[in-house]
Length: 78
Image (tube, rainbow, N blue to C red; front, side, top):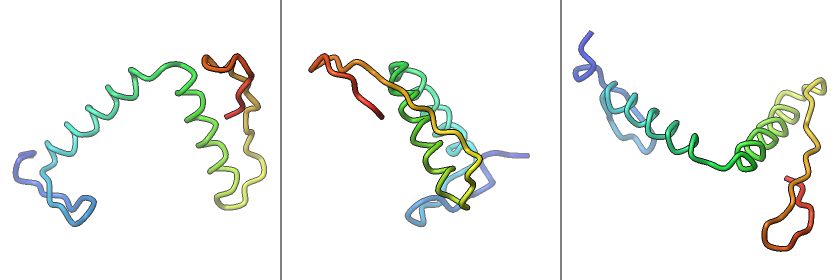
């Protein structure tokens, strides 16, 4: 399979190769890996909220997490 020959329709009707798709996904993963731990947890909680409301699944657990704010010293809830 030649990754340069396979074309994919992406966002905004942009046509990209399979190789470009994989490279973009890898770049996104590397950027996400550099996020602070608190940001990763906040993103996870946001996904839990989406899963809870999507399809009306009420068996999804949404974490109640407190983070100390580095600017105010107050506790921040995601």
